[in-house]
Amino acid sequence: MAPILVAVLFLVFAAGSFCYYAQHAFINADAWAVYDMARSFDERFYHGTLIRQFQFDLDYGSSYAFLGPVLVYAADALTGLGIYGHYIVTVLAGLGSLLLGWVILGKAAGGMADERRPPAVALSALLLAVVAFNIWELYRDVYRASTIPIALFFILAALALLPRRGDLTASRAFAVGVTMGLAAMTRFDVNLLVLAFAGVVLATAGRRRIRATVLYAAGVLLTVSPWIVFSLAVFGKPYASDNAIVAVAVKQLHSLDLILPGEPTLFSDFDGWLARVSLTAADFLNILHVMLARSPFAWVFLAGVPVLALLLTGWGLAGGRRGGTAPEADGAVAALRYPAAVTLTALAGLLLFVGPVATGYQMNTRYYSMTFLLVALALLGWTLAGMAAAEQRLGSRGPRLVLEAGLVGLCLAGFPTMLREAFQEGWPPLRFNEANRHAEAHPDLMRCVPADGRTLLLFRYTSQTLQDGIRFGVLARRVVLIMPNNWPEVPAARKLAFLREARVSHVWLDEAESRVELVDEGMVLQPVAGCTGFYSVGTP
Image (tube, rainbow, N blue to C red; front, top):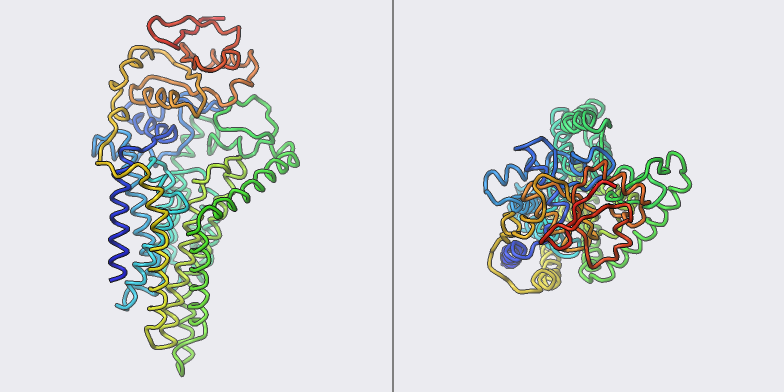
């Protein structure tokens, strides 16, 4: 009954959190950027109305490759829910990731043939879900319409394709490459993991390792080739990304900055770049410490699961059943190959920390969730593999009972924090916010934001009014530009040049901010009648 009780509690939580976030979801600029690209498929391909990068051709999106917008476009076409199609995609990706986790853990346990093992596998999958919904913020990305759960889904799908026993075949290596390529087509920051996963292919392909690795690389290249072709044709670069310059710059930059030409990079000043990255790495380690310190469940999980894994795996590695044969011992060792592959993937997942550290985005802890979940999956995989091997050695169900008791305890330990964080404002009915679906829900902006112009939103990135302007621009298909993050520090001459180059016709000004930081004397602004904060931009 314990697995059933834990499963029911978790399903109640999952249903409640879905309803809660459907009403209270914070759909941020990243989600609107993906939806903007999805809507461009019916008009001019990847020609956006939300301009938020200033390094390449302003008229085209470079923040995301094609897969996220394609999935959101399909969801919108099928449901008619608009931006909430993105919400549905991420919810399904999050659910699919947990189901794939179940498959992976089943393989780690030696398959599902033994009828005594499924309860332990199910409880391990539930514990993985509790981890995801508890301390590492994946559920926040699921319900804010992020692409992180989509990328995680394809990474886990590639892991699930690896064989439980025997060598990875060349044809399956190609399929794994295609799957990892889909992850790369979702988020640019998984590219290092995609490259490192070639090591997992090498380790699991046996005598076919060279051929399998070549076919893995071919699958990846085939899948990402549409972005390579588009990037070369539009931006003149083989693999354009709006964060590329941020990662290699000596100075701490942001992808939303208006970056001046000739900015020093690691290629011209490696020591300066290394000094900056060393500071962000130290801050990153401090952030990890703070994250763990504020979560008692994290300590319980990180202490309890490795102890179970070591105990049970040690039993299994001792050999076959007492008095058993050498082939039985060899079989016990062979059964640990799959959890070893999962562990290699988790180690490769540490490379996902490189992006936040290199770009200086280490404060955004949601970027850590994929790595944490891969590590959790590897630890749980070893507990199951060890349980299976120990059962074979002892010829009894004692290891299974010990593991299941430990898993039930850990699942129940994770529920209080999960519930407290998820339902701070109660459990509301399922309702989508119409302001996120229809431009007509914003009559003042319909009147003040020109349909045939380009409006620069002079608001800080944290301003809710900026978020309103972004939302309206995408819904109404009216071109809006986010204020460059470093706008107050940009020289006046460069600001005027930017206004000309970007063909800005209007600005929406945050009247609560000091004009000295937002408007220079050379900017000719004329108030728009009846529209507070709106100005037309004249020729200097």
